[in-house]
Length: 352
Image 1 (cartoon, one colour):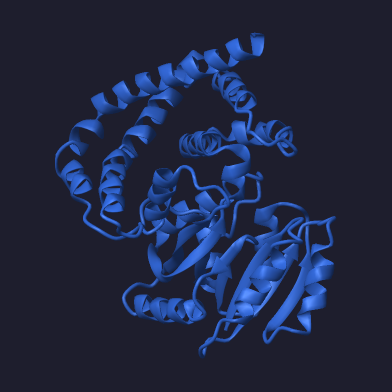
Image 2 (cartoon, rainbow, N blue to C red):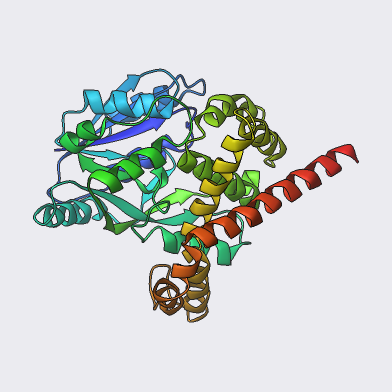
């Protein structure tokens, strides 16, 4: 049996859509759904309870502390299924046989690999029509199985045994729990892209600003990679100030990064900047991938389709110069100047 685990916090508008969407799934797959509420105040649990008797599957309503990692770990602990699927509340399956297709794919992959985890490719549900090129690129990336291209929005499907072996989600902060588990899976197993598409809401990008949100995501991924854990311990207070704003204000996050980088002295700060250069350089392939996405989009192809000729050339040639000690150093310097130029402009705007 499959246990679908959904962390929830104030999602009264979206939870009914997801629960009904799951009810439309057909095929031989048997599943339960565990909705783990983190203290919603908008009636999310009450709405789910009203729907419970209308659903063909077993819906279990549970509560835990408000932290997505804690909520998902608690759901896994209560799950009856041998397989687990972690979904966000703003997810929707586009086809009624999505779970059946995914289950068959996982069964095939497990004949070849022992520890395997699956994720879905994404389609963004948008209210705004701008940034079409950017969304195409982001959707295309979700078809890949590269480090830093897999996140919780895509759904994580893995066995209960493998999940326990990995130690579950990291509960030490309210950030990056999905990226940390994804990295563990890369280290101890393999990822596979499931054959069905998962739709996710672009509400955060549209509310906070696509550029602002992706800039913050890049910062968080970089800090997570270099092990700047003190940043995540302090970032909660900076993030809470954004909860009721429309456009994301990046200044508190940049300022905090500057402060934390100097906590342990200049030598540690320089080492962290070099590690940042290594991380950024290792992701330079995305520039070549973006060129391929643009060409494929102009040809009318869907995200995930088409040739990736620029990326192939990059991997065979340019990569060896970029991903080298010299390349890491140059990238670290360029990133340093970009960071402080951006921080300086933010301070200037605040002064004006």
